[in-house]
Image (cartoon, rainbow, N blue to C red; front, side, top):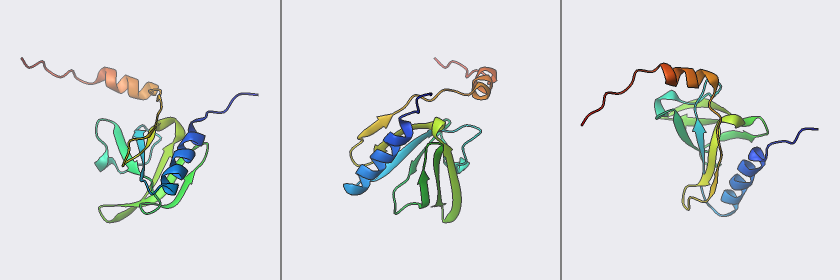
Length: 122
């Protein structure tokens, strides 16, 4: 029998700890083809999401991923993040939490390799 990842359990634990202590849980995400997030807020292939009770509706954190509905610039959007794209979970106010290694998808590696190089400016 294969061992399950501890990541979803740690994400749930930090969320619960934040709720118990009046802190705001933030989820750091490496955006890839499987993530459904508001693209306008993605910077350098990453997004940080407030997943606190007051910021989300129908928050579900299971072994497969994190899903919820939230308002972005007044418009409600469905968000879906596979657990493999979660780069970290931390409390906004203290920074306490966990960072995770996120494997880069082959498609993302290919896109990065084929992107034009930035010119050097001296």
